[in-house]
Image 1 (cartoon, each protein chain N blue to C red):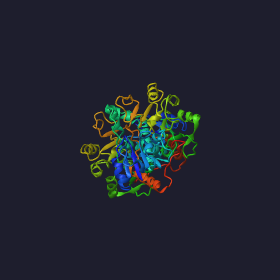
Image 2 (tube, chains in turn green, red; image 1 turned 60 degrees about the vertical axis):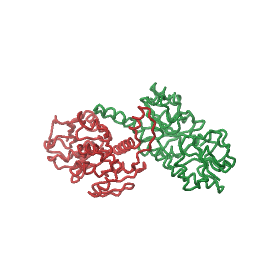
Image 3 (cartoon, chains in turn brown, blue; image 1 turned 90 degrees about the vertical axis):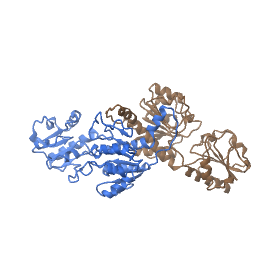
Length: 306
Length: 306
């Protein structure tokens, strides 16, 4: 039995060291140099090559190395096995801190005051008035972010795939619900899972519904956003500004028009980072469950795609 | 009976209009053109000239036009009368939004990323690690700000003149307590009332106790801060940065060294603004209480000075 680490785009050195405290190094395989493919029982993935799991005949379970599993379920050659994701309670804390931080960066005019400071300009203005925050995606993280923002004094509304009943958040579902939520959004926060139905959901038809002073915050996945539509909406004053932490391609290429756009604030995918300790603990637990034939923790609903 | 408005440095036009909905215009006097000084029963003050209240022989009560009364109690020729302040529940909400906003501006490196964005530099870093926020002043506002920051995931400690027992905030008092609190402060937030004993409390001996990565946030009064000591502490790397919303002299003069200091972020006294509606309601209520001989609301303890 062994655990396969398949993460072509990121270094696994620290991860292997951390896992080795709990799993014998002989039971840890790192793609592409896999010694005994037939012994692999669990695969830990981050943006693996689609089809590459076909090599492991005795695979029993798959785990994402993060909260999202979109890159796994979109693999059409994926064996039909249970899929787990990492559930890190600190992700929600980090996310609420990030989302509130960028909302306040805009509301409090911190960028505006920084520019005025450089020319010794004392010009008090109240915060931007918009008080309604719309959260797309009311999973564990979206719910916690929304309830926190409510406690901070905001009016919070939300939209999700399935109907929800959450204290402090007025929530909607379906196409009509989406329009209702977006048209009231002073701040529109995307915290959706990436699925075929949410891909490109942040597009021109949605921007056209937003108030012209509305601000977009995308902290989910780059593929939720139609980047061309966003540029047009900002250039046509259909919406006011965007704070983006995730992008279609990361790192953002040097010639990407987002870098120099004055209405776009870029942070380099830092809004919430899974702690290595938490991830390792959950991976080890699930690897052991594979060995003993128990059901794995934090498995996703494959039909929903998250 | 009449209400005197004495606010030499600010326009009272809107205030008079709002008060006139509840009090006959004949009962409203505006300094310096007071028609009948002997009829004045209540004085509403904002940075009045010290000694100027001696002219009103039938004065029964005094009210600040804001949350602070420091400029009133420091008037040595003040008649010995009850003093009220405005208590606006929205001030605490605004203050918690402001304080968390500037903490996140620093923690999330938003300024750093803005500079990197201008040169297309993708360089992810986690947030600054400091997780302990020290609140100086645990009155109604300080307590609410502290409890909110605790709910946001921070470790919150506090210091106040009198002993407190507040859920979620480990609090200290006295000289020894002050040293203990300040030496642990990743973020030091001043929300103290201004009194002779707190004037200049943000000084070199306090900065020397702070961690070198500590950040000062002053949202109370400019006179709490020794501005020369702050410049030295920042220039000697004794502390990391300062966010200042209040100053010894406002507006900040053009030649003030704070403007161009790269470690200082200036906002022009905007952290929390009393709403005119709330202030007017409380002023009218107290004016009526004066007429009927009832005790005024929100009166301060003159010995404490707040």
